[in-house]
Length: 421
Image 1 (cartoon, rainbow, N blue to C red):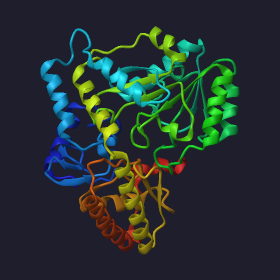
Image 2 (image 1 turned 60 degrees about the horizontal axis):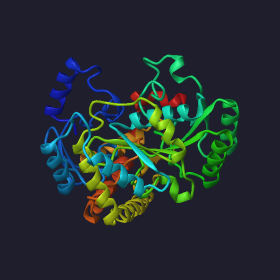
Image 3 (image 1 turned 180 degrees about the horizontal axis):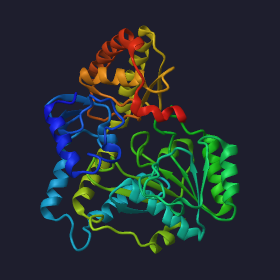
Image 4 (image 1 turned 135 degrees about the vertical axis):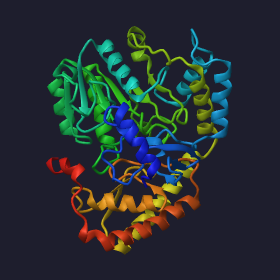
């Protein structure tokens, strides 16, 4: 809940930060009682600026994989920070991390590192254009690939040329994909694919294997590169590229968020076909080669290889999903849970402006569970069976509150734009 310290910080932020906050960390499209500012996290829990503690089902929008403040990952980071972080050249850790990622990801023969998911997807676009000499991109309508001018979802500050040469298809629709590729004609550089449909405000959907195979075939037929954007889902549905589970290998894949458990690093991985093009593009950043996040990444990947983190997260996610389904049905609500069990999205039936979702989310927050009313969420390996039981108890109470109050809920004015979708 937003308390006095949070409110005071918001007032101060409004004076010195445009809009008070920006990007996905802004709570402008969340219920009014959600806190904006936090003081820290431990394991699966988050503490807001007013000292309230929550079980965090957002995991910092994905970076928290093994737990906030994970001891061995943070120790690796601090050791390297004390030795040398941003230096005049990279440390040996850059080579070691590239070797570790190439060994982990089946399609990858090389790796390049940067800081944000947007950096990685933009590098993928540039490498594809350098490889082909073409400009066209095929993307799924509504998919998110970052916040650079070529891919940002909002129009402010963007000119038509920033988004030129883009052709859109419907995710999992082969005919639509083929039409977009045909529209690109001989000017196709890349087909971009999300590992599954994880658009905001709508149900998630697993990739159809036939759709994925057709994307691979079309890229090969046109001499284009296939890119799987695994920034959000990487290491949460597989220890390999997410599409490895359906037997489709991309030429390029993009990674970020949790590959160093929240320490700032992202990556572009690619096959030998794209190696020369990747070497030809000029991409860089003052902090891209810093060693501390690479040390954290190496320890994170060790835990990925040597623990059952993924299987435990999947089991906990399935327990959460089954328990929520039972409690929603008992309260009389149609409650849709889509996406992988490790990355769930919750939406209510017959709730076009999300008034039910907003009220339920606020009731969960009041009971100490941070959920999101329209964005996919994340489980982390620090969660326990006790945490899931606590979340289900909170959900039972929240569904009860919603059953009592549903008839009196008014429209969510800040989401009025959904009516036009």
